[in-house]
Structures are given as C-alpha cells and as structure tokens.
Length: 200
Image (cartoon, rainbow, N blue to C red; front, side, top):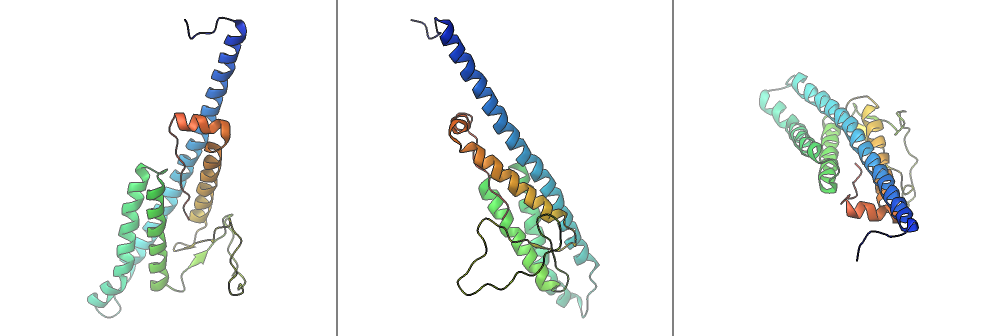
C-alpha cells in the first residue's frame, strides 16, 4: 500500500496543500522578518538615547564636590548600564517575550532616573513623531482608552525613538495576529513560531 495518491485528483489536492503551506509559511516568515527589521531600528534609536544620557553624565560638572556629584548621578549611571546590558541581551533574541519585558522595565528605570536628574529636560512625542500635548485629567476610576500606548518621555529631544517603538509594536502586533489565525496557526505550530512581545 502506497501513501502516494493514485488518481489525478489526489495529486491536485496534494499540490494545493503544498502550495498553501509554502504560501502561509512565506507570509509568516515575512512578518517575522519585519519584526526583526523594526527591532533593528528600535535598537539603534535606544543606543542613541543611551549615548545621549552617557554624554550628559560625562559632561556634567560637579557642582560641590566629586562625592556629591557621583552620588547624584549614580542612579542614572546604574540605569544606563542596566539598559545597555539588557539591550545587548535582547539583541540576540528580539522575539523573546521575557527579554522584551526586562528591556521595557530597564527603559522605564532609565527614564525615571533621567526625569529625577533633569526634570526640565524631558520631551514627549506621539507615535507619529509629533510633540505630545498634555492629556486631560481623567476622573477617578477612569482609565485611558485600551489599546493605546502612552508615549514615553525620552531623554534626547528626538522623535526617532518613539517612532521606532511604535513601528516595532505595530510589526509585533501584525506578526502575533498572523500566527494565531486558524490555517496559519497550523504552520506556525509545525515550524515552532512563537508570539513576540511589544515594548510597552
């Protein structure tokens, strides 16, 4: 008994299934490549933010003495080092949800340390690169619209990081949506494609 079909109709069904599989696989690989490309842009923007923060730490002159200056910038220096380390680790596996969550936490720590050190030097951009306007105050118990990300307050006054973050999150959303759709879900399971995590 042979596993190969004996009739022409059987061969046509096998060919259609094979072409469908190849097409679905190629689509998922294209979406995965788009996420990786968007991460490369995000990585460059985050490195630029790190360079800006590091340059500001280096350029800051001690106001009183070296010990008070070093203790004032120590949290910012530690946050910069932590983000640089996690950025290097995430660069190896940008689709790992755990690594992306750790990177997001380190980024929030850096931004908080920057805001404490330089409260007047914070610039917030929307995802399209325009300067953000202050959000209206919400009544107690109300929350912002679901599905929208709050823009981050970046140290360097450039919209590139927020635009790169937005594009990365959009690419991750498209990839994650594609691998859970029914027919493509089978292909994703067969080739072991896993969901990615956005940078929140």
